[in-house]
Image: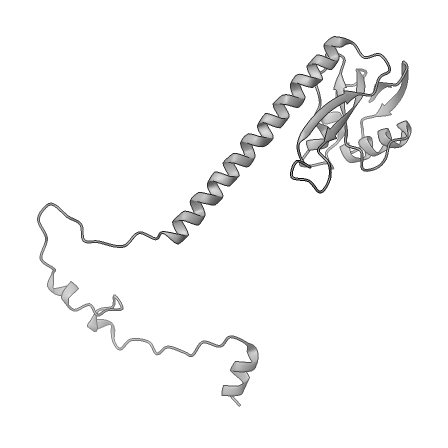
Length: 191
């Protein structure tokens, strides 16, 4: 099926949605004379973005995300400056129209702010998880005997257990083999 893509000064072209999202975005960039590195997306007439540029599976058919015979506008997603701390931030989402409707611009601005808040929230969550993992590996809790209550006397079978957690009835402990860091260490000792 086909969709209509509007841009510029009331210009439009047809696009077949029976292709991958990646191909559809590449074709749209080429048709509009944009660079390959420009991040673009499509939004419907009410300003709802389709978030095709965030697709985790860009090989999926575009028809899965876009309704046939509808009209969409091309929007450029402006990110932070490359090489800076804010290079992945969402600065603005701009419709590539000569005279966009104020409602469309406002809707895109709101969605841009939401994307940025979501990105920051995700970064904070990841940082908290990373710090928690780091703290747990650094501050391993020391084992202490449980306090309170009555202590149970060990059973005879547990008294037979050695330090390795094996009972004397299991036979002699297995012999430990030497640890070899490299294959060369192994070959030195076995030739």
